[in-house]
Length: 113
Ligand SMILES: [Zn+2]
Image (cartoon, rainbow, N blue to C red; front, side):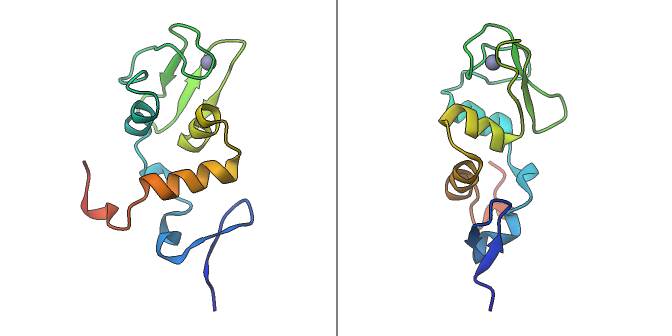
């Protein structure tokens, strides 16, 4: 009698969202990051890093749902989960929950907006 999917942090995700739990690659990091930062990091070029505030050191990895900051004082990089962790100052568990709650819709397969 499973009640949900076991997340990497040991918590359980709601069953109806379980199929998305380990596939964060379906999330569009550029769209979510733009929303979360008020369009501060839209596009593919180098931007002011929303995490450390340095200019022209932040960018999204081309052809990938990942980001990286080249500032030596920052060095933040990773997936959308890590981006949310840095920007919202969440731990991994909180970031996963945030993404599940706000960006994984149960009917997401039918919408691409
Ligand atoms: Zn940075």
